[in-house]
Image (cartoon, rainbow, N blue to C red; front, side):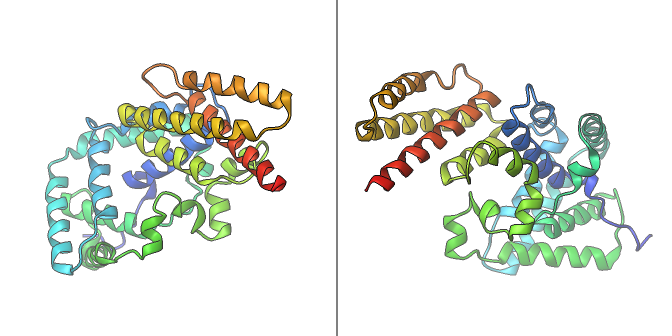
Length: 291
């Protein structure tokens, strides 16, 4: 038994999920045609893959909250029991193929050069899964430390501000240097065209990341946003004084219904909605300046 086994973030399913999600955001904002990140996400993190199933177990331990250690411990045991049912062979093959394709399409050092706010808990879950399924033996001390970290995370009750800002917290609550490091490519590219992200834009990016493999849920969200955008633009139209601008805005409104065609939300649709949000923000800014 080796007591010096270390956590390997390249093989951590939750970290791969998070970093690939962020790469999707970068590729979308960069207007990348048919980004590989999206196809990889759909291929490896769907409900039929071992990685998709393992990520669901990670997410339970990352997101579920209980009020006491006893309930938290029961949850950990139940998740570990479910994890034992997964095929380590298929899981390892999927991870190998995913990492291989990432290396072929992206700078691997840059891809993994991102600090994650939940890194410690992700690493703890990885060590627990590895020890309990016989993949890797981290020894009794690391296993115990991991279980304690996971349990404490589960019983940690978020404050009211966290509850109200679950969607935007990773964009706004991280320290400035961490935020810039995590989203450097995204911010640099986006700021060439727009100012700071508003809440609607953050919501859209968050939904796109979290539901890119769930086409029905994403399409429903986007359709609802199109309705809101059209309503907001119509409300702003009477406040526009310039005749030429009013004509152009009327034309824009007439095209909102066709902003997302088909049953599948594509990258260009997300970019189009981001631009609609930016237009609304600019129109509101002009109106505020007048008043």
